[in-house]
Image (tube, rainbow, N blue to C red):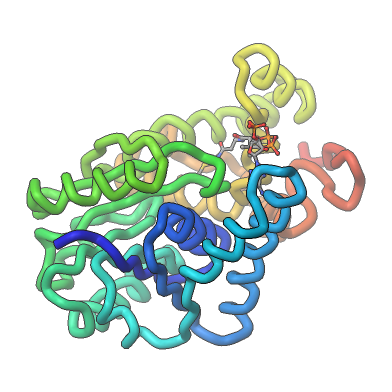
Length: 294
Ligand code: CAA
């Protein structure tokens, strides 16, 4: 069956971006949050991204109105009965995801594809609690979703080739470049990105260079859009620490082990841009490296 209506469960940073690009691609989108306040906040992010697009001259006011009209917010799961694909973007807790998928399994029609945006949990383990493990994939988007071109499309050993190809084509229809990955923790991008970010923290701990110099080194020496500490602050130190722990648990390899400094910063609430401070202090413009971390 053709995909016409997309359900997005979760309207946080990633969920709102995913709902936005699906509506931009012409799909009817139903997006769910757990309460009205969070839903309003999430839909507000989409509206303000599009408003900035209008300011920049990238989006016309008519196009903005058209995209917003395709989005329907809800706090109930029952509305997902109308969806041809459901993309789950809730907290990285297996228990929360399992309960959600079991509920959705009873609500959605048999043809509905399930897709998780998890960055580190097992697609196979989630699929196994549903009665549609053959129609279950990973669709891993990157932050900021409206600007990042990549989607990792992940298959478990249970995913049928038809469902995988349908999800792959769907990711392409969003104007993204899909790549194929199997269900190994971290998939392709985090498998390579997480050890790099952890190594940057180790280099800082060892006194190889300062936060600013290591960032400039990778930005100007390798052409990366952001240095590793700016990126850590952007992704969230808590999120990176969480992903690293899951990867370490899976592979038991030193390269995935969190350095003590990262752990201490997470314990101290220095979570990066979203908390106002991480490797940089965002109360200043431009942000300044935080002193006394090592
Ligand atoms: N509407 C329309 N277009 C917009 C827009 C808006 N609201 N805001 C920005 N744009 C456009 C800009 O006009 C610009 O377009 P052009 O290239 O045509 O000029 C483009 O989008 C880039 O915007 P900016 O110039 O404002 O931004 P930038 O060049 O400073 O880049 C960035 C910002 C894309 C975030 C870049 O710094 C980057 O790529 N950083 C790395 C991000 C990254 O690595 N993300 C992945 C994190 S890992 C992850 O997500 C997965 C995980 O599991 C942890």
